Image 1 (cartoon, rainbow, N blue to C red):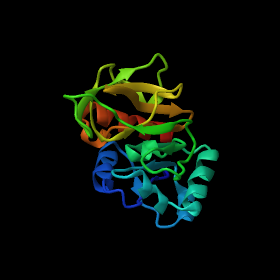
Image 2 (image 1 turned 30 degrees about the vertical axis):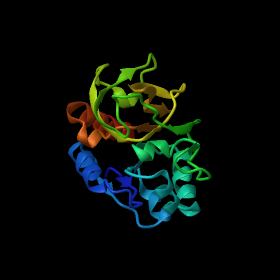
Image 3 (image 1 turned 90 degrees about the horizontal axis):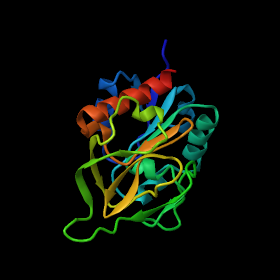
Image 4 (image 1 turned 180 degrees about the horizontal axis):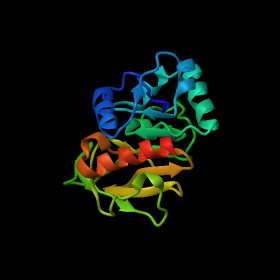
Length: 204
């Protein structure tokens, strides 16, 4: 029997849409109520909408549980705020630590007029020369749906970027840790393929 993927609920708000998207991609899901319930997860998804400080609700026990499973080789997927949490920190909540699984610090988007902040709507992905498993069968220039004010830097772990005043990391992959700044569950064909690719990663 295939082990399920843990969808972590910390009150970020988009749990229902992420669950629907992952289920459509073939995932068997559960929502753990306690960190120790992560032990049966074949993969972990951290969704997210809102302020970086919301991640404080995932206290030391949750952080230890997630990091322990990642250390054991379990794939981790962060979405929007969940991706920013993979980094070290964010200007949005000074003093609040991220997981530090991907090096870097998230900053506020500084976009000149007529561009607006928050960055809301469809934008294109520019893939790097480093092709990760999450973008398999997703074409360069694919359109995906964003809604965010803060963004992660483009680093060596970035496999696709987007631009809105500044260029920022849209997809990151480091071994079996990955994340997307946009909402794949709202990103049509490209988003569905990315969710399928994560499910494939979990089952490989």
